[in-house]
Image (cartoon, rainbow, N blue to C red; front, side, top):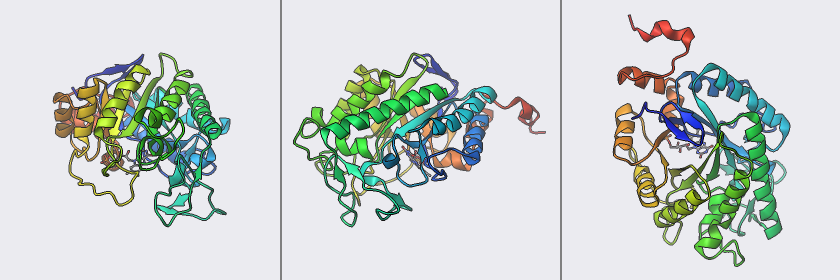
Length: 350
Ligand SMILES: Cc1cc2nc3c(=O)[nH]c(=O)nc-3n(C[C@H](O)[C@H](O)[C@H](O)COP(=O)(O)O)c2cc1C
């Protein structure tokens, strides 16, 4: 199963391993460089079914730091296109990009807010900072919300032009879209706040706008936090309800992570700790899901898939340790997996 293909629209993944999006904080002006070329290229050579490029800002204030990736201009998209072309020409991996807006969690360095001079005024659904020591974020007006939807749409258009196979919208980890979903960070009294339907409106508008830029050759994923581990906060029941609606809006997969919106939330972390959230969303909303979080071995990944708890396995830290995770796993499990033809002599150990 781990090495069986799966299709989203016309995009076929050769196996179920996904390189989870991971910020590398290594850009100047949001531009990908040689580091990113090698970083993503080597995971493609490692046989990974799908790579998802790190959280990429849809506008300058959408970044977490001054060194995050961006896709708000053509130059940025052209640099990313080089990586996409390498992956397509030299591997069987498909490649996606995570489109993101940091909202109130922007303007930081090493997890600390930086000054207005070095950074920027952050944005949010409501004037509530992530941490009380931080500046109060600017409360978006309805017109500004619409501009943000347009920023996601423009970013999607550039990503499609650059050749990406998958677009993932970042609606997790306490960033702008999640800030709208949660009744703890969104206390608006207009059409974007209050009821569940109002809180999810920003995300649904982004999904619809992004979908206008996609075609059958580009799939759409959404990453959510299955819960934010806080009383009266966003929880798994709302996640399931959201997933049912996302499916009706042509979202192909819900990538289920957790947390990130509430400072100091208590999270008990153990191997596969977020898998139950993926399982609940998959089985109760009847959508395809990705599981992520401390998944480190073939057996663990295979079991999650066999148990019907997820359709894809996202790996972050383990694939940083081992870019060849997928191909190595295939040797151990005696399965077929892409291996660069230049390396074929290494398929036999003696
Ligand atoms: C260095 C690093 C950067 C990350 N950046 C992102 C990101 O850009 N977008 C995102 O959704 N998650 C991000 N994450 C979270 C991972 O995608 C993943 O959900 C999390 O690390 C749990 O998976 P793991 O146990 O396999 O590491 C990051 C994680 C790490 C370690």
